[in-house]
Amino acid sequence: MLTLLQAQTILHIHVQEPHLLNHALAVSAAMGAMAEYFNENVDYWQAIGYLHDVDYEKYPTEHLQHTEELLTEQGVETADIRAILSHGWGICSDAKPLTNLEKSLYTIDELTGIVAATAKMRPQGLADLGVKSVMKKFKDKSFAARCDREIILAGCALLGLELSLVIELVIGGMKSVMDALGLGPKI
Image 1 (cartoon, rainbow, N blue to C red):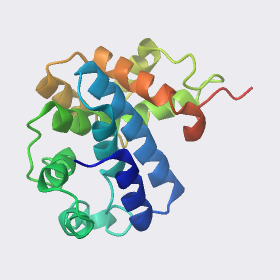
Image 2 (image 1 turned 135 degrees about the horizontal axis):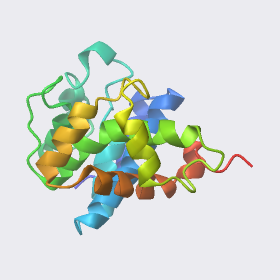
Image 3 (image 1 turned 180 degrees about the vertical axis):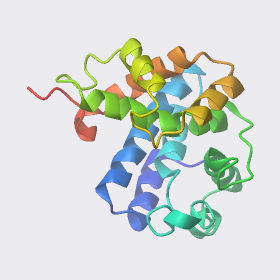
């Protein structure tokens, strides 16, 4: 089973761009919160989240087409690779999210972008960010326009969870690393 330390080591071999490393940390933290909600292995879920975009820097137009090869070479198990591939379901992967881990990754990958963008607009960043503020920005399709709301809503449906609950969990997870994300209080 993949550990967070292994995922960090592998990702840093393939990714150097700060914004991609920041995104990996945000998704990892959010996945940890999702794991806690589902009473699952937090370290494992964080590892999957951290490693989900391992091929993006080298192959942005062929995202997930090289993931299996890269991760197999690093000794990552087939089930872990499949979980990572599932976050691109219907976009750049045929791996439909089946487990709560896969459904969570599929859902929160895009959602972390909206949460981060909302936090950046606030003096206290994530520290006092509430669900209501994110929901308001979620409805504004011009805000963080590259974050696909349809994927987030489809993911919530797959999970059987309300969007507001998933937002609450993602905020909570990201708060745990808000300073590292540069989303702490600005004062």
